[in-house]
Length: 245
View 1 (cartoon, rainbow, N blue to C red):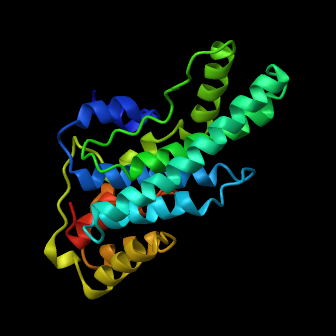
View 2 (view 1 turned 90 degrees about the horizontal axis):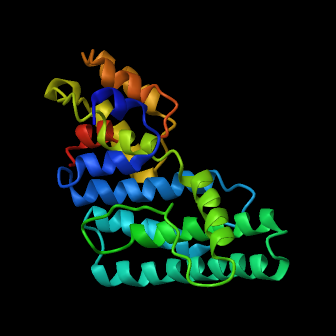
């Protein structure tokens, strides 16, 4: 993969293959969580208030930072698995009852199913986390081809641009950036810590101003902080400020 491809691609799968074995488990887990949170914002017309999935994401993020145990991670993953199974079954029933005529409802159910499946994967204890929620796992049956096509379309709709999330987490691997200690003022540290803990990234431009006031002139840092995002927990700039890897 070239630098130009890294900066342009929207599908995160080739990016993940490119950085395989080169980044921490924490980074990969937070990338997975960021994908699920981004997908949820794209499911505004879906019933995505399932507490099991939200719990799985919160616990997975805590686990990434060493703040909870594998036992709690496994229990949270099971909650998300049940939501995934529920909506996957619902989509299959819609498809079988209407012979594909209720495509909108089938895709809705599959989209939520994929969202829940990705939450389940984010809470998996395996350190090699490459969440591919786009891949169909349909079993045998008369409606296999139609089923897989609808599932794929639904998953692509909510996970098709995870490359932006991975760029937020890893930055540009072709151009390493080091934050100078003199830039890490009390204001900079406080802003970064607050955003990291609260998962509220609205003050990103304010952090850019604070870093610039402290002497930072790095265009990659400042442009990322002032961009529209998406911004997620594990952001490479926030991690750099807070000393996380």
